[in-house]
Structures are given as C-alpha cells and as structure tokens.
Length: 113
Image (cartoon, rainbow, N blue to C red; front, side, top):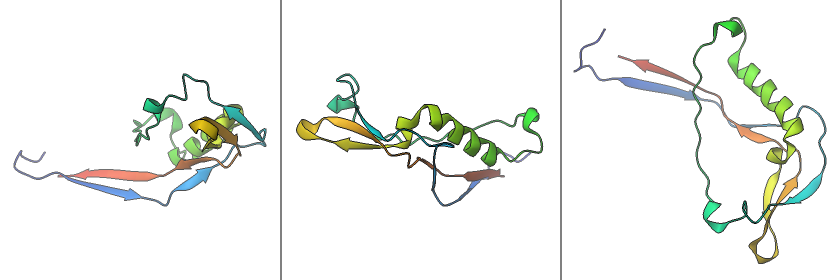
C-alpha cells in the first residue's frame, strides 16, 4: 500500500454519449405536468453519476450491456422519461412523449497510487 505522501491519480475513460430508446414502441402523446411538478424553482438540471459495486451474480456479463437493456425495458413502462420537455403558453411545461430515449454515457474509472 502506498504511503500518504503518494499522490492518488484518478483516471476516467468516458465513451461518447448515446440515447437509449424504449425496447418496444410507446404511445406518442403530450402530457401536461401537474402544477406541483411545474414549479419554477424545480426547473434545474442536476448532473448525476451512479456508481455500482461488483455483484458476483453478474459474473461474466457486461455491466454496461445489462444496464442498457434494463433501461430500454424500463422505458417501455415509464415512457415519458424517453420524451422531451417542452414549454408551452404561459411557461407551462409538457412532456412530448417521442420515444427518443434518454442520455447514457459509459465510463470506466481507475484509482492509481
């Protein structure tokens, strides 16, 4: 193990962003956000990074592929998340359920002493 004076180098390899679409066709429609969901103070974008520990039950499986397939299957039931927010009259937000998909970026990280 390295001593405390050894700098820690954190290397990240990030792949190109891609869209994950629902695994099956979904309804094409517009959904109005409720007044609770459409508050001006909630209109922020938060970057999100999720980390997963190794799970022995997925030994031999590509975690990236498992996550992609799970997202595609989930978006069939939660299809508005695969759509796009649009602002209408009086700044009212609607979800245009397009089935385009959501952004997915695969990355690998490694800490080096």
